[in-house]
Length: 369
Image (cartoon, rainbow, N blue to C red; front, side, top):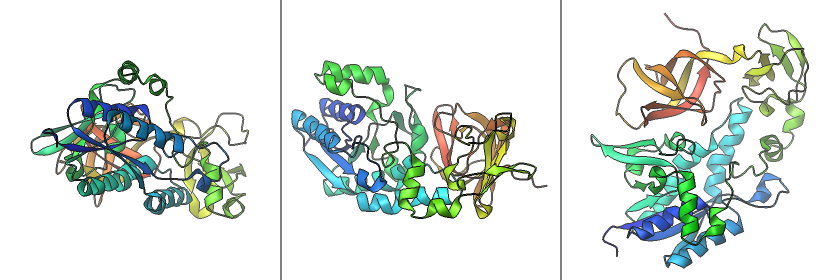
């Protein structure tokens, strides 16, 4: 038994999780590797060759790393839990006219729960992942902050973690950049791993075609929703669309409608199978409501709390004043932001620290007196 402790490392077979395991092993931790099988490509209806975190090649890559360093490796089949929670929610959100955020939900309700449960079974004190973010303890709270590599920072997708989960989590890559990680792998003799390409796909939508995935998962969906109206914000009908679940807020390409000037999807109304179009300026909003908020840095937010708020992963963030609105949080941005999409995550920061996050519930609502 290592004096530093025993840590269960989530290993996808990619460079980030592999170097995570390598670093912890070199630092003297007793490492146990685990690869989670979350999805079968056959369930997505795609004919694309199976690649990514759930493929046999990736599982073998993770196992080879563990064999090289001499630590045990397990494969965990969580396809049932993943399908019940992540896939069902993904479909339900699009059917509700929202844009889901499956990676956040998966981290919060599947991966961390599964890892901690198996960590207890294997007598591991800690779990570790290859996320680019940092964790520290301050004022009796465990905090998540941005990683050194701001181009790779993944603190945005970790807002849903509870204090008890963060307390047992290690993120060894937070103080490194992606080029540094590639160099480490190469210098350690894993040149093929160092060259391994990035994967930006949703793991269960391997061809990035979520529309085909929805059609495969919901038989008859295309026929049920085809032929709804494209309308302008004044209510004028300007055309027919293929079904509201197949559009997202801010979409411009693929609308198959010519109105002279560029138009964007500004609102989706599932009750009437309506897709509202507008100009780029019509996408700009200054208010939103956020549901299911989870606070990390503080136990409670003071009134009129101001934080830099991101409404999507690659968003730079905009200052907003935050107040409670019943069970929701009200955000008033200090300047207009573009493309607020219900269903996406709103994550708010104080400096580099994640204060908390939640799911966008509604935008552009009337101000109460």
